[in-house]
Image 1 (cartoon, rainbow, N blue to C red):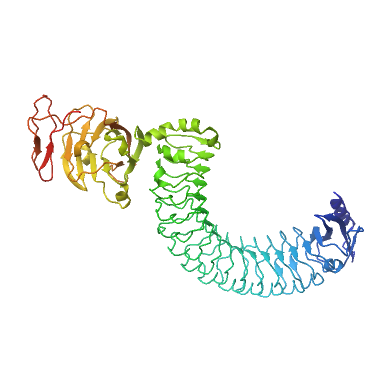
Image 2 (tube, rainbow, N blue to C red):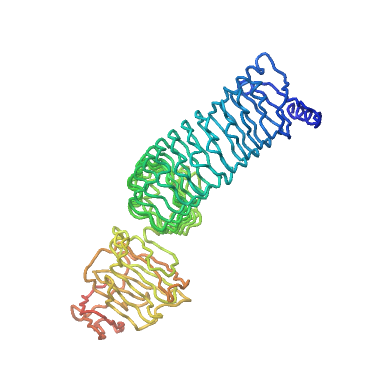
Length: 640
């Protein structure tokens, strides 16, 4: 209140005819140092003043080390430094200063900190900082449009320089040439569209460099070569389209690198090879078409990794293989549909996992290593319908669990560990689905199968599949997803409703081995239920109400069925029509329909002919089979 009153007195007593204007200094002990709160009203930029005040025994002109200014002035009067011989800190913020004239600080030989933020400075005279030993210079949010190559010539002791929010400023190639002691340089929001290769030639002690919120698209290959002590580098929120593989070759001490919110579409596999001490890497909000699997293999010290909104559809297993110190990983808002096996098995120290906003349908323990340190798990806004209960049981200290907007659970809590048993009961449906009790989902046209785990110890022999679709749905059977990750076909494919819902077929290893064209099997308006069995090495397809399969095929190269997949291929392929699926398991202790007993030990179906098996115990007529391959002998199957 006292400062405002003194300023008001200055303003009301000032007249344009006065040659001398009194500046008032309110002396006080501030943060344990003698401080002058300086009141100034100098809209015309005059330089002839007397300074009055209320000095005391412990704080006066002779020992004041800090000035906090308030008021209005368009320049920095030299009289200030002339009256404060031991001044160390001068703060003149938001005072409408527009020019730094020659030698305003000539008498401030002890000045170490100069804060001039939020003014209107457009020009700095090359001799403005003569005779100073500044260590901190803050020019944040001024109106500088160009600096002279000699602007900082006398500032060899400067450690911190803030030029943030001087939009459109031109920086000559050698503008920082004399700043050999510089530790922190802030060039955010400076409208930089080109990085000059010579800027950092002599700033060899630089530890922190802010280049975010600018518009340069590339970085000269040698721009950072002399920054061998650099620890923190931010180039986020820009327009970078590419980075040369050698950009960071000499920044071996770098610990934090921010490249988020740019226009990167690819990263060289060797871009990070030499920055092995990196602790934090942010790549979020770029549009990567591909990231090689060995891109991050040298980042063995990394603790925080983020690639949110990167348009990633696949996690490469090799990405995180060497990140044994990783604590937090964020891959939110991408196009992920699965977490591959062993993707995070090396990251035993993970405390936070953020995977929200993807299309993940399943969480499996096999995708992760030990989760004993996991405290935060966020998978909201996915399509999760299956969760391995082992995944949750391993998370012994999990506190924050966010599962909202998923198919099988809406759980969101920051107290999971406080009521783990209760929350686990709420997720029973997710665990049951993973165990194969029931899966409910929708599929749209795709070349990729939506794969689901069949647990061998459950002795599965068949699945009951209810489908609502207009045509052409596919069920795949295979032994290992490793083959699918290499984009190979399933070992067995069952197509129902091919050719405008006229045909159904069985394919083995990509070759059609059986064709049924007797009935239109699908209905877009109602669920049709089928049983897919693989008992005794024969794949069989039934309509639920029928005793006999309408397709049966002896698997030439038998394999354990460990996964089944679902997909839709409705014509045209760009159609947004969908298939609705309900899938449940049939175990060994359930009745599985089988082909009827025959009077002989085998039934033979021959290429391009139709054969009706002979039965001795029933009058029901088995549907015909048309095979497109060599003769296949189907052995008699005993009833279950």
